[in-house]
Length: 553
Image 1: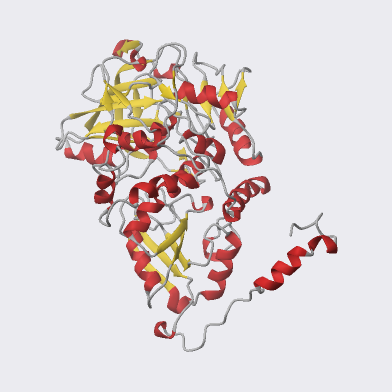
Image 2: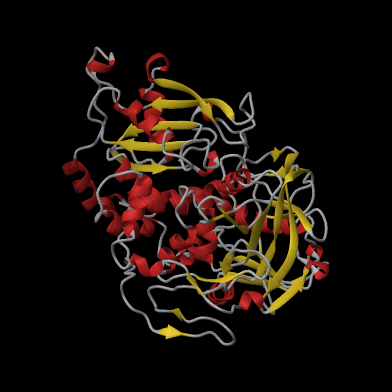
């Protein structure tokens, strides 16, 4: 991974504390070590257990945990020492952010936080639940995030190459995937309490005002359900929602988001039904953030990660289905003719996204569990909680990416690049210009890669997760006149460096070894590497040298 000092043209300023750098460095070091570990076997059957009170059965074993709902996840985190209960009163305006931010950046072992007394609200607030590799992996039922690649690879190996949509569709035919489609239930805990429009008051929720210049309080971890008016297929996405008053919020979906596409497909004077869930099981919440192609059901991805289907229930007042075990559900509509100024918002880029006009969500009904937990997150200068959501996506999609571009060995989205500014890719280079072919292939892959501003391609013997190794080969192998590709095209709406909104120039860097066919007329110099025999001999005598206290053999 890069840090802000790795490459001058990727410099990002002093975005990280020393301790924060250490957290990310430890993560990368563990991955480079390639220490053998126990793999999870999702096919193994685990005993069925029930939690006290109303709920659906879930499977539990020593090797794998499937969380039926958020409170099961919370209970498990508490049992393994990964949750800290805070009973002292706390202010949802700025104070929660400062506490959570310190825990993410300054302490490698900091737990998730459950605030029981948030000023102005009767509901407890959960934050930092995904804010470590350990918890992110636990949330998705694996021992380490790399295990997600192994889990997907077992299915991908059964299918033939094709488009991403073809690949995902083919997976459904193997390994009992058809049983993982969402299923409809008649009643659900998320509808234990039903409040009609007159009784709805969003200001009673512990919604955070995260940063000093934010335009107001924001719901930051919502699952926003919409329906394609043409096909009737549901989509779920995750879009920030500024709370304007008791019954209205902003809906920050951008032009390339499916929710926005559904709105534009509706008639100009129509009210588009929308349902928003706050606080589902962790796999379902993660699935709502995943960059899936149009037409692929995020709830099916959640079922795959859970190892069982997601129970869905029909909303009370809109024609949509939502996860039955959610904590809160907001039902309502977006009026296609109505826009309202939304923002600013302290965003995951580390700077404020500016105020602009966005659709307005009107809440006409609120349903909830009897004792709901409000689950939220904050974003800002990395590393923060969303870094681990991004790392999970990186590992989950690697096998699919390899199938589509077979020469790819591995890739890394550095946390410092906020998952749209930089990806490092290693390839098995076979012909002149191969690195450039991979760059253009990645930019053409749709939602996951099309907005990536910088792509660095290295040879397959370079560990893309090793910051020092990537910086070394890039700074040594690149000639600016030969190895840089400038590609005008769409960029992320939050890219403040672009000269125009959502339109800028992307950079590709070919850091591979060059051949005569690529204009390199000399012999490429070999790397300096000690012989295996000498390394083995020195390791065998390491104790003789008395250096064990300083350096491991």
